[in-house]
Length: 128
View (cartoon, rainbow, N blue to C red):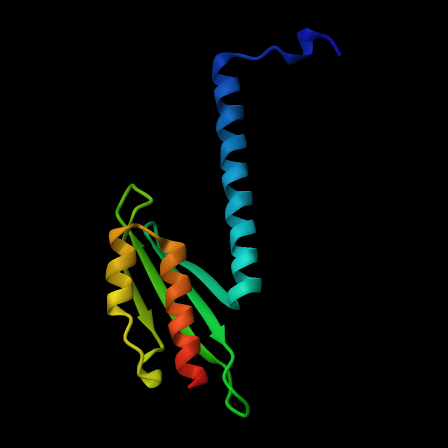
């Protein structure tokens, strides 16, 4: 191969770099979702809109009860990746209130901390 085979215009180079960044970001996102699925029993993820992501987790209940499902809806500020709010459904029947967790984690923009804390509190309620 010669140096001539690598000639490209600035526009082509920027397009190539952009596509590489997008693919790398997608791979990281997919790897992160795979890790979440295996560690926390992430059952479903759904992008409801441009700034809303719904994550449904299956939590194992003590036998003979069936698994319990909770859905965490993450809402991001438009045109940013900053967490603006979160909503959790499926906790009423467990008697779990996570309003304090949501407020604290949204303030520091910690999505992973929010998910981990909600799941931990939910699992504790199931075990009790």
